[in-house]
Image (cartoon, rainbow, N blue to C red; front, side):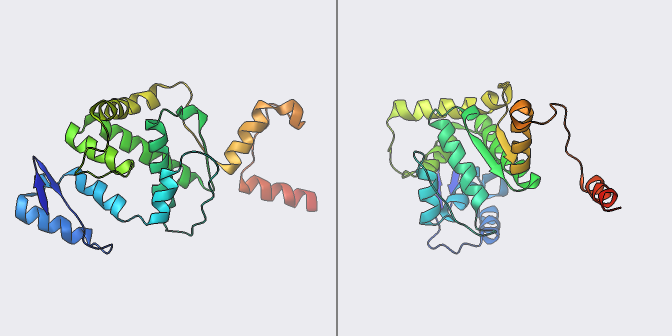
Length: 212
């Protein structure tokens, strides 16, 4: 553990960290109120492998990521999006597609929670989060003062920018995205502009009627 100002840092010596144990030890030694959000940030990024960090860091050009279930895909994608937002990429220019509604909701929820926290946390913790997001040393001033001030200003304003934008974040399931395209171009798709998607029960009943 290392104490700086009002923040308790947790610096893992290896990759296998029992964060429940860390939380208990910090609470006993310093008091539960001293367990800073910086620990959460440290946990999130210390758990990432080099491939995950590379995926977040590369924000230009095509990138293919192959990963299995439970490998941290959502965490990587959320961090990648936040890094893009702080790099002046317009959120309305980004399209995210997932397989399930739960996945789309989870990704959007994480983005908004992170942006909301940035609007209210103290400058010291915010600077740590930004440095971790850009993979710079929290001990050193890798950004000059004006760059860090600019990034902190963007981070503070991100939440209001997201919720006030008349165009919401485009995080859809593949099916929902395809449906939105058909709604926009019904003539080209040769479908009624007022079509609706039937649910599984209606689909089964329709198939049964055709068979009869």
